[in-house]
Image 1 (cartoon, helix red, strand yellow):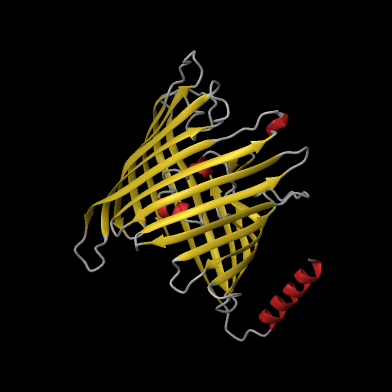
Image 2 (tube, rainbow, N blue to C red):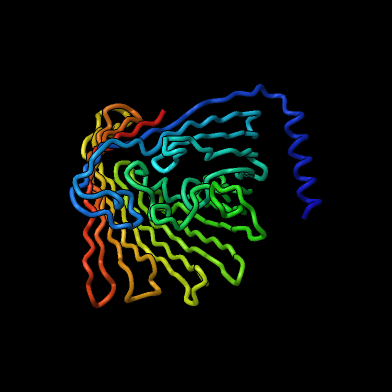
Amino acid sequence: MKKFLFLFLCLLSFSLLYAQEKPKGKFNGVLFGDYFYKINGDSSGSSGQYSPYNKDVQGFMIRRTRLHYEHSFTDDFIGNIGMESNDISKLDNKVSFLMYDANLEWKNVVPYSSFLFGLMPTPAFVWGQSERMYGYRPVEKTIADKNGLEPAVDIGVMMKGNFDKESKYGYLVMIGNGKGLNPAVSRYLKYYASLNAKLFGDFVVEGFFDYQAGANETYRYTVKGLLGYKGKHSEFTLEPVFQCRNNADGGLAPVNPFGVSVHTRYNLLRKTDREETEVINAFARYDYFDPNSNKGYAGFRENFVSVGIDIIPLKNFHIMPNVWMTFYKDKSPLEVEKKSDLVGRCTFWFVY
């Protein structure tokens, strides 16, 4: 294995050394945030974004700003580096930046595929179909990301690509530390894999699996699926996810989070130009999530709902009035009441 890695790195070095194309680079980025008002709910200690706030709290938030630079050494060798600030990245309780992307991509290392090394998004989200089909990350994260089931980024190696020239059938495989942005390492690596296919033109299916062992007979694996339809001016996705955490926190029984997310978008108004540019869309999402489906009579089930209007006055600029809601249901016979989180927001989002 060590000899293989050494030969691979030598081949990569010589390929870059003899590349004759002129390097070029480009910047891009994204920013989104909102004004919010908490209409209902207490500071309940739940993991939801607005759960820490009491009723009637309001304010302005920049929930993400990102700057990304892509440097093309040649057409096939790409370097990526990106910095991000979000509502949880803080230093001395002040807004701060962190690195979320730092990798080298070797395109066409095999036909229709790329090899990546470094810090990069995991197959669970950006590289996979989940966020591409959903399309409304500024409103809320996808269900696995929202509930902390998967790291958004990891340090490791990845192969991603397609099996065919038409890109109908794709795959991703990755080996990483499994620590997210934490640079810590251990003897236990994390293994990711996903397969996706485009069917009948507008339908997409994807299957995702990961596994990571740990000390003292602990291990964790995640199974996630996606079935989606994406037409020119409408979309629908169904995304179930299940995770098993064996011997979690030293307990005897496994912890098994389970959830299902349904999302839809529909165009209400568009221009009459050749591209039929969209001006106003409506969107809605519903998530069912049980933090531990292995315990049928303890804890709370969560029902998350978001609905809103997406107004697009300019290309890549969105103004989105929306409502963010989480309802809690006690799983025990006592039916303990936990107040729902209800938040009204006006979200803005632009890509540059």
